[in-house]
Amino acid sequence: MPALSEHTSVAPSSSPGSDPDFGGNRATARVLLILSQFAGGGESRGVSELSRELGMTKNLIHRALKTLTRYGYLVRDETGNRYQLGPAVLQLSRHGLEPLNLPLLAAPFMRRMQEVSEETVSLAVRNGRTAVTIAGLRGRGDIARRVPFGRAVPLHASPAARAILSFLPDREIEEYLDGGPLESYTPTTLTSPEEIWAEVEAVREAGYAMGRGDHVRGATGIAFPVLSGDGTPHGSVTLAGPVSRLPPERLEALIPDLREITAELNRHSQLYPPERPSQPVPNR
Amino acid sequence: MTPAANSSVDQAFDVLALISASIEPVGVTQLARDLGVPTSTAHRVIATLEGAGYLSRDTTGSKYQLGLGAQEMAHALLRRFPLESASLPCLTKLAASTGETAVLCARIGFYRLRLASAEGTNDVHAAPRLGQTARLEETAGGRVILAFLDDDLRRRYMRWRGKRGKPAARTLEEKLEAIRKRGYLLDDYDDGHSDLALPVQDDEGRVVASLVLEAAETKGGARGAKARMKRVRDAAGELERLMQERPALAADPFAHIPPEELSPGFDPTPS
Image (tube, rainbow over all chains, first blue to last red):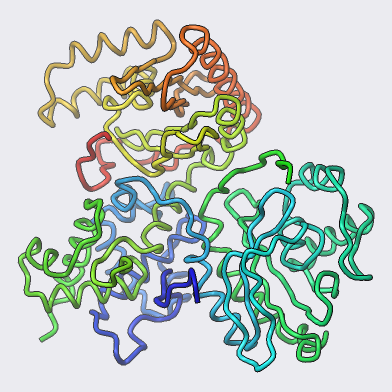
């Protein structure tokens, strides 16, 4: 698949060394896993919670924290009892951080979405008044939704697009709704600003956008936003397939897994600032 | 057969440091040579780091670079500064109105840290290089912070740099005095780019950060410079008002640690 790399590119959340072919050093892997726990949002962490979360003894956690503190990767926080990331971490950004590579970041999570559903998974980003699909994995069935690479869909007219639209600041949504015609593709496409606002509220409330056969007949899907550090969207990930295989009850049943996977993706994506925060909507 | 836990961890952090220091991806053979260990040992260390997401292979599949997991650690540290995300709307406006890259620099110990940035909207513009550190005196953004630092901390900086074999502090003090008088620093470079840096202070006058406009080419002569100055001043003023409304934004996540003890683990050189 284009733009998707095959190796795991973000720190795993599971216990290291469970893979029997793991060629590395398990003790070191544990220390690195403990350090990785400090990436989420940058909060400080204590020995007991790390021990609980990772299922490692307090003694083991203690020793690892001591090592990481010796290197300056961690320092004690202002309470003196907990730890926070330390200045040695800045070695890792010595030449400046790379801009976000969204397809690379999302790839392992998209693969998991495909594994739990066997359906097509795609990644879309905003471009002006549209959402454009930039990466994807085709579903495993004989009949599956195509990954619509490069297809630009108006921000109100597909789940992938609405998952992006709904998490824009209100002002930008207003600008979008006032800024041009709201095209209709099928009888179920929402085209009035009032209906679209109601849908935006529903998507914000649920945390995902549901397909309504409003863009392509016979296809449906569910899309989750991929948010940046200030809560605006980097893009969205969508699971889509034929209506025959994805009736509402099957989509509902998939939601808990999809929520969990996309929540983890968002924990990573929210570490990155938005590429262009709150820019005015350019003309299409 | 298994090396002692300590030495394996040490090797892992050595590899991380070597790869962080290199601009190009690094191969196993070179890593083994630089560390003075057998290739098989280097392989093992790399497998550990790759498995944890700290390293990834480059496109050839045979050399290694920092993985997304490593990048995220640095991003997570930046996020501990409340100004990191709070400053973005302001930086974005400045970048859009000037076309040039706007950078907010914070202080971590005696280093300036490139904390947040909005890339210039001009096609040719300065790179944001987030997370990069340099000693305070070495860049425009850092020198402005140093100039407005309270006297005690500045004296401690002078002692700290003295211990690190820096030449007499006299000329530096003079430069800093000039920055304080002028209220800003404009550095023009031979290649035509320039840095315009202003301090960002909280309502008690403590310098919290510096705002730098990095112009890829200096356009519009004196009039252009004046227009840019006004925009950077306005943006710095906006950030200061923001901190007055929400004093928590000025929080320094490393305030509880003496600056002398906060080293990024290598000696950064400016670029």
